[in-house]
Image (tube, rainbow, N blue to C red; front, side, top):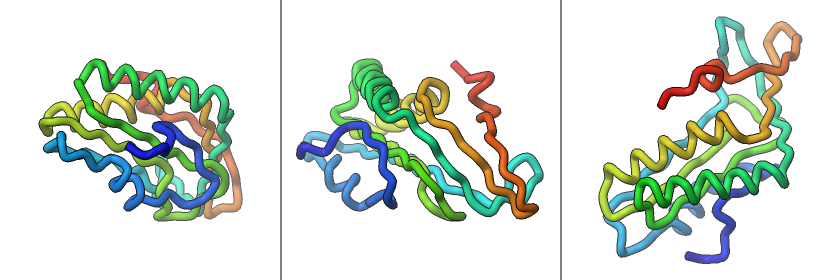
Length: 148
């Protein structure tokens, strides 16, 4: 693997082809990727854009722990996360999680584990900008009752 950090926060758009290239490994037969986008509705309210604030030192440290856990638990060969910070528009990629393994089941499970843990454990806050002109810091509803 090249010297790309396994977990990074980016103030610029995520380069998805570069992530795939960084994950490429001929020892692996499986590559799973999750990409989270900015959508136009949340809880019945029209959303124009989102804003993410990240406490980067802690987010990176905890993100690396999550990746290491997933690699051990699911026997992943590689895993990577890139999460955006700052103001994002509808359709922008907010987060990308990638995992490789010899077999697809581990890659899928590892990718799912990583995004679920990122949502629960990282110091990343989301402010929604609504079509009405209002703005509000919001909680991830699934994060309050994470699945096992």
